[in-house]
Length: 433
Image (cartoon, rainbow, N blue to C red; front, side, top):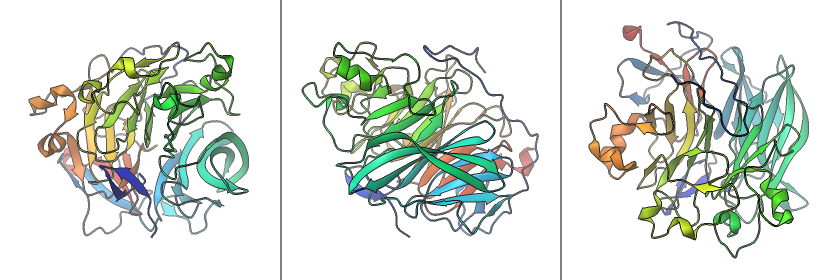
């Protein structure tokens, strides 16, 4: 099975790499209701034999393998209680899981460029009749490698049609740092993340570098790829503004996680560092994440905020949390469900690739940072995991393989996708129910 290489920790690794709602500037926040299905586990899936299952640190939770034999899966999306889609990076196949079974025939087979971190990478679903499915993938047209987002329609019963171009993004030089994560915002807009593709421009905080080029950014657009409302940032040069109107954030090296807090409507992401300081970030409109001048807290880098490139309306902020040694962070998920208990409801799960670890974080009372109450490690107060002991203190489980996606299912349980080809379900253990 072909796998994707991420550059992290300075080496080549196998990877794919309860509050009053706060109004986000420029966004009309629509807050989804948490899923509560009681104590029952969705029995649509058949639990599969697993001689070496992942290990969870909470005895009140259990993990079960429910799908296997996927090939380098990168992202997944639930369409309804009976259907979900899973993307395979290298084959370009969109696989359907219907009534708990992986269907033999793919819904789509896309001709993708799949070397390094390229391939079929991201999916997002917009509700409606029919549902709109957005796919992010790398393709070649006349020898020109591009990262593109298309939208399709799902009419149910295993039918997907269309393929209308939404975003046409760079693919070179790369071939890594393509990003690829997509998510729908509470404003109904599409958010897409692309990495730096090894470029050195103003969006990577080089003042004298080339102008905006759709790299190192989180893009916010409507279904047709048009800028969604007023721009978060502006520039004296009108030529700049035509690009800046697309950007919600910039200065991003590369990332594989995007999700909105279901109680505040605020966006969070994960970002990978080159040799360390993988990050969790709170991403407000106009956010400058600091790359290529900074990864992790800026005071640890030798740079200062004055070294960064700013546009009108932009701002820098240190990460909400970071890891000194790279773990290759992947997805981030606000668990919008009550089925695992109040401790987990609307709080954060984050995956990594290097260790096959899943991390859990509770948010603080303002929901703009993380809380470490109850964790017996005072050193986390600096918001950096500096040692293996500190990493272990925030880990809720391990042995998943390279985690690529984490999602709350319509049954209210947590699903974890691994590049190894397995889908896992986490639910409350019978003894705890």
